[in-house]
Image (cartoon, rainbow, N blue to C red):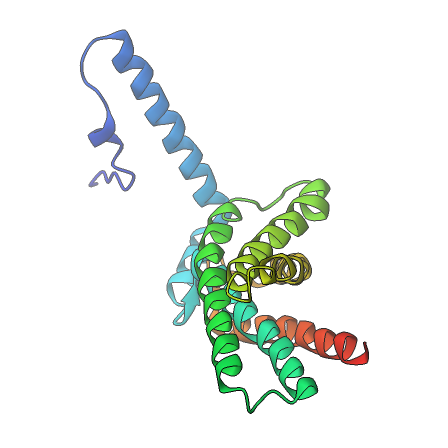
Length: 219
C-alpha cells in the first residue's frame, strides 16, 4: 500500500542530529497532530468527507464571511442613504448621490476583505464556551462593522467616520452572532452550500435594513 504524506511532514523534518533539529521536528509533529485533529473535527467519518466532496456550490469559511461582509457593506448603508435621499429631497444633487454610492462601494469592499479575516478567526471555533458566543462574537462583529463603517464614513466630511463606525459596529454586532449560529448548524465540514448561504444572509441583512428604515424613519 502506498504511503501518502498530504501534510508534507517529511519535507519539513530536519534530519541533522542536533538539539535544534529535534526541537524543530517536535514542533512539526505537534503542528501536524493539531491539523489532523482539526480535520477530524470537521470530518469525523469517511461518509462526511464524501458528502462534502459531492457538494457542487460550496463556500469555505473565508468566502462565506467575505460575501456576508460585502452584503452588510452594501445593503444596510444603501437603506440608510436611500432614506436620507428620500427624506431630504436630495435626488437632484447628483454629486451627493455619487458620493453616497462611492461610500457604499467602499464599505462593501472593506466588509468583503475584512470578512476573510473574520472567516479565518472563526475557522476552528466550534465547541467553544458560552463566553465565546456571548462576548467574542458580538465584539468581533462590532469590530468588523466599525472598521468598514469608519473607512467609508471618512469620505463623508471626516466626521462621518465616527457615525459610520457606530452604525456599522451595531450592524455587525447583530449580524455576526445570528449568522454564525445558522452557519454552524448547516455547514458540512468546512463548507456551507450556496443554497443555504443566500437565504440566511439575505434574511439577516434585510431584517437589519428593515430595522434601520423603521427606526430612523420614525425619528
